[in-house]
Amino acid sequence: MTPPDPSTAQRQEILLSVGEVAARLGVPASTLRTWERRYELGPTARSGGGHRRYDATDVERLERMNLLISSGLGPAAAARAALSGDPVEVDGDAADFGDAIVAATRAYDAEGLRTLFTRKLEDLGTLHAWSDHIAPSMRRIGDEWYQGNIGVDGEHLVSDALHTALRARFAARRLRHQDHRPVLLACAEDEHHVLPLLALQCALAEEGVGCHMLGQRTPFSAISAMTLRLRPAAVFLWASIVHFDVGALSSVVDAAGDESELILGGPGWSVDNLQVATDLADAVAAVKNAIALHPVDA
Image (tube, rainbow, N blue to C red):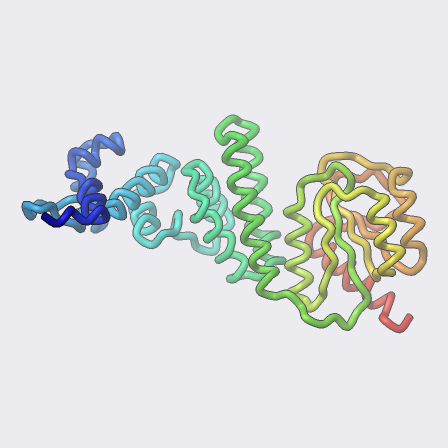
């Protein structure tokens, strides 16, 4: 006697009736029938006896729909998201985008978050996507965390999704040749919020400007040493929480001298006599101006 195919047995084990799926999701069976009638989210498999059953893919779609509805999305939008793989259909409105980000975060929909960020970056470009949609949505996530509506797990999930989307966008636009002096990007000592720096790296790449990225928690001594070695046109430092005065920056200021423009970004600085970029657009303009002030042959 030929033994049963393990893969066939496994597929048969995951075929569920409407009652079993309803119990799994914690919704009435009548709700599943409504979703099938209105949104075509019904069972696609059949049991050995010919009865319609939900397979693993069907159940996954229903679980996503249920999570998104529980997170505050309307059933029609949630159904479109469940069928397409996106967390929600979003138009150009910043508030709607923020709603989608919050809902996907509450639903722990990492794939959907990455899709939302990636599509917005592709549709608008990094500068406008970040300034008008992404940064406001991340502030909303912070507010939701402060109010106890989203935990640290959700905050980390959405941050990782955005990190992945920005890295992928930059990788697709990496410059092979640079006709300008180097640009150095780094987070200050003990600063781990690197997302604004990644956004700047992407926005500059879209402007044809390549960068050396040192990333988060970079000691000032390391920044100073690299500044002396590279003689960059611009050194951009980001700090969002830890407050530094000009004394802490003395080694970097000395290394930059008159050959490099030192540009600071973020609310973590307490300085009066150094250049501070107020937002992403200001940072991009400041770096491009530094490149013009310090040409390659200077």
